[in-house]
Length: 228
Image: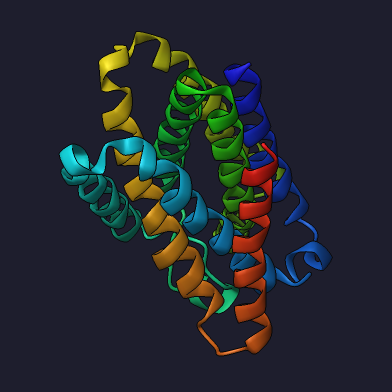
C-alpha cells in the first residue's frame, strides 16, 4: 500500500508539471494553490510529524532536515517560485538531481509513516501530494525558460517522479528503530518547505486572499486528520 501512496505522489508531481506546459494552467490561481499547500504542509509537520518524532530526543534531526533542504534549495536554486523570480534560476542536471533526491526522501518518509501507522502514512501522503503540485509546475516553468522541449520536460518529470516509489522501496532496508529519526528529519523538511518555501512565495506580495487560503489549508488538514 505504501508503494501505491508513493505512486500517487509521483503522479501528482508528473501531472502538475505536465499541465503547466499549457499557459492557461500556469496562470490559474497559482499563488492561492501555493498558500493552500503551505497551510497543509505546515500543519502536517506540527500536528503529525513532530508529535511522532520523539522531539525531546531527536530535535537535532528536525534541525538537520530543515537545514539540509535549505542548503539543497540554495545550491541547486530550485524552489516554488513565481515566473519573474524563476528568470534568475537555471535548470540543469544538478537541479534535476536535487528534484529527484527531494522526492526520494519524501518517498522514504511516506513509507516509514505508513509502516508506523497506515493512517499516518495516508496523511503524510496527502501533504506530499499537495506541496508537489505547485513545485511540479515551477519545475516545468524553469525547464521551459531553459528552452527544453515538451518531450524532454516530460522525461525529466518522469525521472524525478520515479524517485518516490524507489524511496518507498528503499525504506524496506531501514531498521525499525530508525523510523522515529527519519520522521524527525522529514518533519524538518516539511517545516522548511511549508514555512520558508511555499509560504514565502505565496506572500511575495501581500494579499488577504492568500492569508485566507493559508488558513483554509490548515483547517482542511485538521478536518482530514480528525476524519482519518
